[in-house]
Amino acid sequence: MISRERAVDISHRMMERLKKTPGIALSGEREFVRGRVLQGLLAWDKENERLSAETKKKLLAKARRVIEGSREWDLLYAEEMERAYVTLLSHGE
Image (cartoon, rainbow, N blue to C red):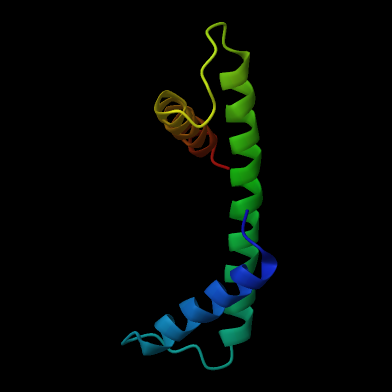
């Protein structure tokens, strides 16, 4: 999980990058855009946590137990997370 302080720091860094990008001018909208970036980061993190919890629940419910933290767990977890994101994106969320 990303802390709010870390998300704020990332949003500031992203705005600094945008400021240095040729062709982009964010004079009056800078704080508005930074706020939207921050909201997006926090929303993404919340959704990622939800998907992660669902994925762990699925893996723990399998008939054949896999030890959490093992290489097999990591591979199955990555596959399930990918499926969850594909499903999420296919629904336009």
